[in-house]
Amino acid sequence: MCFCLSNCKYINSVSMKPFDGSVLIMSKKEIIKTLKDKCVDTISFKKGEIVADVGAANGSIEAMLSMFHDSLTFYIQDIDTSVCNQKTINKVVKSYQNLNGRPFTNEFIVIKGTDNETNLPDDTFNKILMLWTYQYFKNPKGIMIDLRLKLKTDGLMYIINPDRDNYSGKVLSTEQGWNASPIERQISDIIECGFELIRLSRNYESPESPYIMIFKKKIP
Image (cartoon, rainbow, N blue to C red; front, side, top):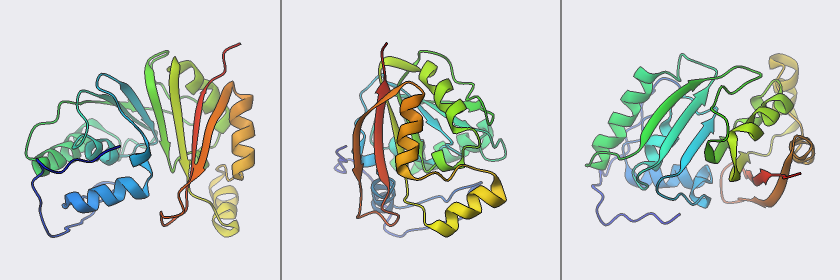
């Protein structure tokens, strides 16, 4: 991803405040850093693509990406409607659009999922993103089987996860009932659900040293 700032309006100070499940970042320099820390800068987007973000909360990542990419359709999916709802996402998009200094050309569609189904439309997506999300699935295999139906034949699924320490993994498992499997188990489970791993890398410069996994459909 190449961030071109020649037409950007800067707000020099960084103003952050709670914003329904996320924070509102009021500096383009900090927005670029956030996207880099989340490793989203490693993903290339093309005009006209349809992209789903599973576990997207209030859509702040999509709003930030819209400052640098045009003519995309984002499906913002989550199971928590207290943060993932049209009213909140409209506010987030409007805030970043105002900072951008020009209207966004992207579309933002809100989808409420469940622990077992994403409720995304079938055979639709050029890209599916999961950013710091996989470890929170209570039924990861069920979600992976579901997502395979949503991805286009030539589509790509990007799963970006931090490396969990033993303590945080135990908390996820024992207190929340969520998945906390190691990276090797995650990959084998996803492959078992009909995917093929095409790239695995790690960003040691990011604070949580996340793994970046890229999958595509395995065609029988």
